[in-house]
Length: 219
Image 1 (cartoon, rainbow, N blue to C red):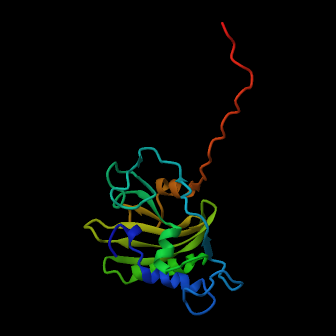
Image 2 (cartoon, helix red, strand yellow; image 1 turned 45 degrees about the horizontal axis):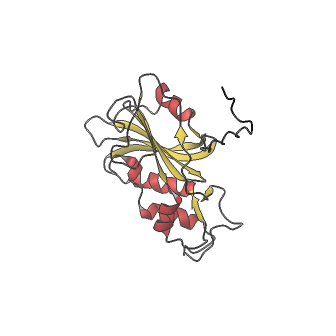
Image 3 (cartoon, rainbow, N blue to C red; image 1 turned 180 degrees about the vertical axis):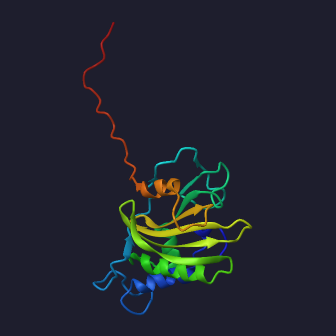
């Protein structure tokens, strides 16, 4: 696996996640929405992204995506968010998932998020540059179940600790990566602050102010 991890997930893992959300054979004709759909599945129902926000620790920076399709990118370093204390997130939107799975018409986009996370963990175990791979306990991020694993990334001379979670939401599947310059499995306080305060807040269209029927005064 190469950093950044947010663009690592391949079609194979996604296909496994889709198959796990169906009742039997994985074919485009199967209806993923059934009474046998795993409780770890999410059906993506909307195209518009729900913005993700969190509390920014003192001395941290909000960074541009830097060429990657990141929806959220904050770091303790003003230029890099992959090899410093940092948190970034990438969203797989419904349109992209439909293209990957060749889901047409009214077929719902239903993904087993836990299975996807398990497949990602297997990919990490098979990587020559990653070690000490461990599953993370299921937790909630922004009030939504999050499934993930942690590992040490030794791609560069100075290794970093990475925590990766997958979160299924109505606007897509989000991959959230937290990176620490410490290889300890204990999460630093600044990273924990970001992760623990993540929220998704739907944008609302401001209502127009009713116009008064009283004409303005004349002078």
